[in-house]
Length: 360
Image (cartoon, rainbow, N blue to C red; front, side, top):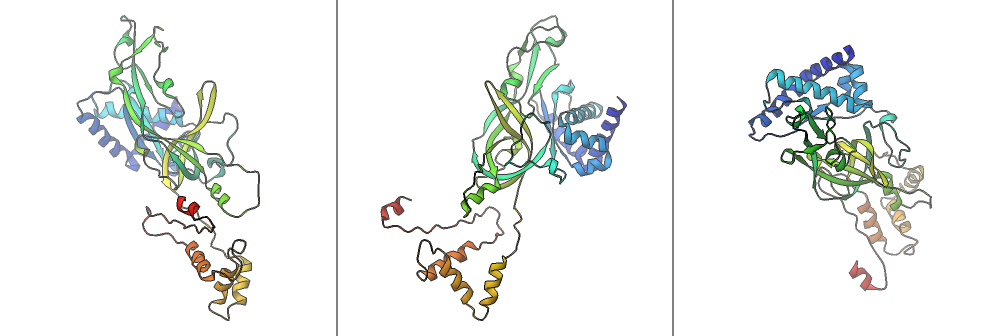
């Protein structure tokens, strides 16, 4: 008990130092100004694990290895802050406070990185991990249930009114886990019935992502037995439309096994998403360096040799050297200032049937 109190005190200190407490007060004002009363009030809190480790190592370890317990601690602190400072009069129970912790990053250790080429086997701990990959498919934005209010069907039970039975979405949970029949009262074990008018909805989007190494299949490599498989990301609320097709991203999320009887699917609940640019080694092979040194006596000899060799399995050497040189130069691309601009590579096709080209 004393350890939990110390971690809660550390949370208050962290929110005060990081400015999260002021942001929390501003978010409460938005809910307090609204005339509509809801069952669940959602708050996003950005947490820097590095700063948290310096403040309280136990709390940081809890955040990185048991995020559900850490979320419960933040939820308790936020509820006490609301009641102490009288921020929202419409909140009656701690269950109405839905806290979502947004991690700024993870420690740069292999234990916190998930290689999409090696899917985890078995049931591991549901803790945040970082992954990097390419977006290959996206769905349209749909609705999901953030939270719902349930009332006891026994009129004599105190839980037949108020906000005692609140269910909120948790990472890896399906819609039926949050909203369905069959729940019973924790006080009298009578059946529960949802108060539909207090259901809170949010936005949801599914994204398919593959490891960036999958792009290597477009290069000339000897045949191998590797097979790349995509992973499904769940983007919710403010993360919707944060990813675009064909872009590389670094995602921090919580892997989860989703049970949809009789199948079990593996997916990742995204926590934070940021664009990612891989760092390629800027090294030139020794063969090219030797060729450049041997042809240094002429300005165009090096490029002429490359153009003469490029595409030799398709076009005999010595033909279309100027065109092949232009294609080689088009392959040398640099990143532009505008991050939204895409660099497309033109494909040069040779065939005797022009109809195939026109259809392509």
